[in-house]
Length: 432
Image (cartoon, rainbow, N blue to C red; front, side, top):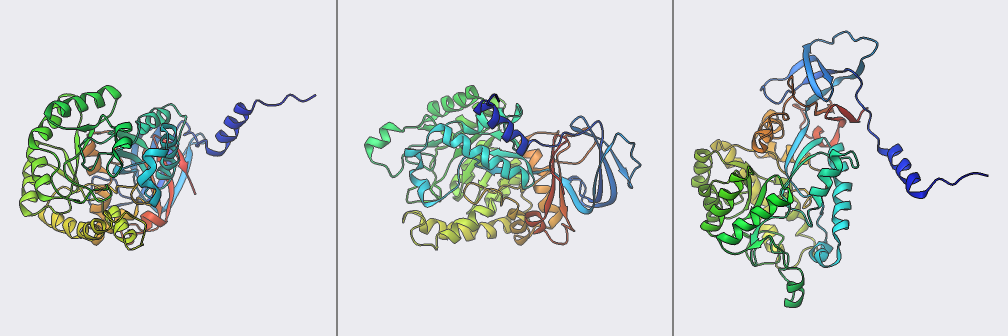
């Protein structure tokens, strides 16, 4: 008589058989046809990358001889880059017409499972690291732990947990609801005043977040009239920045309007996200203060297109999407010309997960060279995060590596259409 396999054990076996990555052997050698290392401004050709125990141990000119114990990955027809870093993502959400009521219907487990599903798509698209700048119910904190323990597949995550905003502002999840619902779903990350701001940062630190995300201006997708008015006072921003930096956390700032951008820069934030209406003075201040700019062109393009579909967005949202979306390319072009430090970030979760790499083409459209766009997603992104172990292909760094079929510098759209190799921490997740 046969003994039935317990259902939970069978499910675990089935899942592992479908998604278990290929473990790196004692030594893995990648033959790279074209190598962009993330640091230099010139590509190298016919190179060998040697990987042992998660890290890069050697980079050699030519295709070196292998021993019988070595694993060879032949990417002689590919452009090889460091694993890409998306510095603005939202793994647990994706905007649909129903998204504006999700907060009433979805449970914490729903958000965590959405995040896990989208994390795998993101990794297979070539993104080995992300900053998650806003989630629900600390879903990406749970996911980060699950990935580190091998329970889930996804990129390295730096998460801000829930964004911090003010009453009625862009991060207030109760906007548009009646007062009874509002009382039921109040959020501890909605603050008013410097004391509440400091408390919110300390709570995030207690929760285990890696950085802080704040909303200093209105936003496109919140159910409120203005998309660019300042929504956080200077004393509130300074309280957040000072407290976050004391706790070793950086501060990313959602800001569309000029005044909100300026207050944020002067308060000492680390990055401006979107920056739609920044002017020449804002750009001068960003250079002076060393503030990074994350333009999120993918989100701008996506919301502008969806705003043309009647009924997709609430009527309060549509005019903001139509106005702000097209402006982002123009602002990014001006910031690039002004010498502002630009970092790759998509705001995916607004646009669709797995399409993150479309941002490369949008950056090139905004005037960046293909090489600079790639560096925005590698060494520059690592600099913003503050992690010296990622962002370039160099001896001693983690083996986060992407292979794109063809000449990526000649056709930047291949980043979206032709990724055929992905390695994170020396483990291969996608291989032709």
